[in-house]
Length: 227
Length: 234
Image (cartoon, rainbow over all chains, first blue to last red):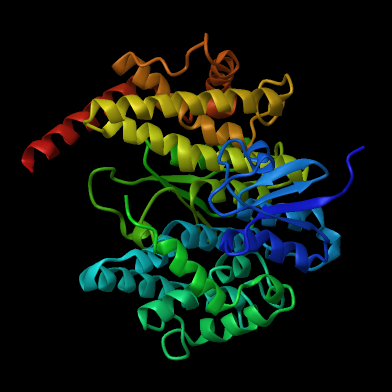
């Protein structure tokens, strides 16, 4: 009989890996964090995620679950009795949460990444404009989804808070590197307050890297010579 | 909440993504109004208003509230009309995660690879792309065998989430076979998926919803002509 053991294969710097860790913390589920070495993939990872060979992977009772947002839903459904629901209660609000989570992964985060890689002022300006446009949309989405409550999910951190909040450390690193504020009290007042609440939450704080540490790491990986 | 719930679907006849909510609505026996968007023309006011972020179909409008993204719409339909018809998503969390994983694979990796291989002018890129597509089908074959456990569909006895996701592309695969002689649904390589594809197309909920293969063939041909003339204009 497989034990109920939970493992998360990941890396401390990955925002995607932060997602299942936050979810497990919210449900008070103990787990073993198995860290991958940067640049090499372990046997366990290759065996558990043969299709994509990517982190994070959750292994529960010996069965792997892959893809960060899918893992968050799995955690929510499996440990439904151990904490508030991470998805809203109505089908419509759930669809909205999923829509914005997909937007963040498919559009918003790729543009954020491009800021760090942008070459020259023109490109940087264009990408910054994209991210700011996205932030304005997400500011409005926050107001609509939260309905006056502290988080996208209402009273408690949920799926969409996790999907977006996991990028906050990288966002701060990008702001430092570019000398340009992306989420602040003037442009995105609601998001700015939400970001602080999110980062200080006990389920998030232990897994969110310090901006300085992440900035050092970013320098290392982005300093690689281009092929 | 009234006796008649207003359900509208904005789509485009050719779009595999628009086929998905149609199948889901049929599975749940939900009546709806279908609004065909102009594929090559301008987008309707209703579409632009309902999907201001992406301006894309399909869009489901239920009691004036828009729901976007085809697989999101399918989940929404499953949850909203949960008392009618079979459950579209499996019930066990691990099976649900599997269904979501493989549908993400189809939408984020497999179909984009097919699209890229179809469009590219480079023979080398086309060959490499098609190899990726065939490799993907082999992975999906393996997934099907393990998930279906001897039943006709990924969802078991009835069509489910993953069937709808992958099945929405079967018409295109069959059409490309006719148009290009490209045998992606090869019984010698993926026998289970080939059998599944035919089961899917002959299912009552799918039969009158997917476009006829010959219409798709004609349309793919037209798309190609348009692509050529666009290239020659630049």
